[in-house]
Every structure is written in C-alpha cells, then in structure tokens.
Length: 399
Image (tube, one colour):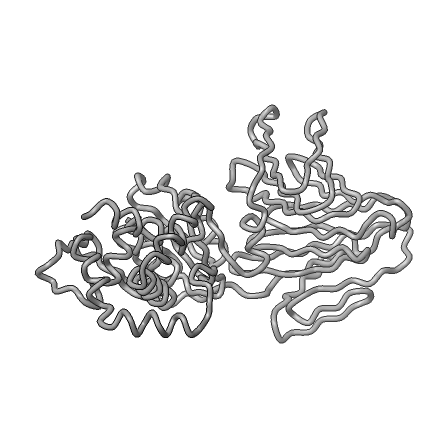
C-alpha cells in the first residue's frame, strides 16, 4: 500500500477517535481541502463510521485493495462534493459521539463489507458468540438507616422518611438541627449508579459497586465528614462559607481529603492497586500517614495502597476521568484488563480474559453507557485487539 495513503488512513483513524494532534489535524485538513475527491473520501468514511456501531467487520484485509475500494465506492465524486459544499459545514468539525481507536484494518474491513470481492482479500474469520442479552446498568441503590433497616431504591419506587426523600432515581436530604451525628449508608451494587444530595447541600454521584457512609444531618459549625467505604464518587461540595466555616472531609481507608468547597472525583475500588483523586475545580488537601499534599485543578493524585511512600501527582484529561458521571466510558490508552473491570461493574458480569497476553494491550475509545455490552465488546473486537468473546449467563470469556 502507498505510504501516503496509509498515513492518511491513520490520520482519519486518529481523528475519529479524537486522538489527533493539532499538527496532524492541520495536515489532514490540508489534505481534505486540496482536492474534491479527498473531501469526498473523507466525508464518505466518517458518514459510514457514524453508522458503524455494532456492525461486524472482517480482519486481515488487504489494505491496498481497501483503499482502491474507498475511491471506487464514490461513483459520483463531483456530485457528492457539491452536496457537501451546499451544506456549508466545516468538514473537520468534531461530531463523533461514539468512537473507538480506528485502525487500517478497521477501515479496510468497513469497505470490504460493502464492496470487495472475497477473492481479493486474505480473511481469517472469527466468531462472536452471544447467548444471553446483558442490559446496561440503571439507577439503583440500597439505603441503610441507622437502625439497620435497608430500603431498595430504584426507578418507579418512592420513599420518604423524616428529612429524606427518594423518587427511585436520586436521594435528597433536607437540613435539620441535630446535636448528635447519626450515620446512613448508601450502597450502589454492580450494574447501578445513584445520585445523593446530603443535608448540607453537597451533591454526590456514586458509580457502580460503591458505598458511602454519611451523616443523616450535620451538626452546625462542626467539620462535615463522609466516608467513601469503597468504589467511585464525584463530589460537588457545598462551600464552607455557607456552613459557618465548617470544612468538608472525605475519609477513606488509605487517605483523607479536606476541602473548603470544590468539585473532585475519588476512585477507590477494592480490587484496584491504587486510589485516584482528580480535582475538577477548587483546592483540596490530601493527607496520608503523616504527610499532607495539595492538589490543583486538572491534576490527579495516585496513592498506592500497599506502600505508604507510593504517591504521585499527574496532569490528566479531567473530562475523560469524570465521563462516567455524564453517561460515557472514556478510555485513554487503558489496558484491556482495566477496561474489563469497568465494564464488569457497570453490566454486573464476570469477565475472564482467557489469553493472559491480551490483558496489557492498550485501548482508547469512547462509548455510551446506554450501549449494550455486546455493542461495546464488538467494537473492541473490530479493532483487532481480541479474536472472540463469548457471553454465557453473567460471564464473559475473551480470547
């Protein structure tokens, strides 16, 4: 395959997966605008790419033939380009809602499906076995009161008691004057998520497989403390100025976080080796085993669970880190093993990677949490990372 064509295909792949640099974007834009045929090829690819969710593609396709097929597919380039011009849209305006890390094989397979004869390619067929449909997670949680009573909170079920109210999709507490702290627990199972507004006005989004311990009401003027027992939570903290200077603390087994009023994300799953704190805005102080460190917006701290000295701070893509709160999975070069952990929590399944050599393969992509697990796994498979996945009851096998 011509190296120029291969390079352009890779630029388009990086563009659709939103991993293209500014320099590469300018190069791609120049290529698109240099020729009406180039623009037609680009528009044709991304138009089909938008519809590719859940489709089945073939692997090991001859990319020389694929490139020729892309061009051949456009029987009326001039008309296509003219129609594109009439729309007066920016060709390179981002519009891909769901994107995976596309590759040459992905593109070639896409056009093979539509226009290449089997005799032109070298195909190694693979099998996708799906036995039982697995639905995405929903809003659900278990509320445990101070007296030990447990209430299932889920859509369509209302619950009201004293200073708390739930419509099955969120739990809201109202403030009341108390002289003694009484704790409640909110447990979100695998396959669930839930929103809670604490009595002080602090908003908390809990991800799948998470548990939060918190006061039913806070004592006026005293420090406000909650505990993330395990899991992941996004906090939008009511400022201390609204509570007579009372600070807000998020306690956990491996570190404590003190804030005055800010937004941040804490990821502290029991089966992860590290604890991750990502600051969206404001300022937080992290405390662990006698030392204290401050975190600035746009940065993430990584705290090792097995080593008290294992602590580091890195600048991160905050939008990607908190995308779960907005209904998305956003993976930025994460290992297949870690991706499967995330999917297992949301879809409440057990995932077994049969071929251990696949565990550390890195992947990038964005998916909607409303997509089925079959759609997500098929998209991952189409990038040639895995050969096959099998779903049986609540277990996914990958090899």
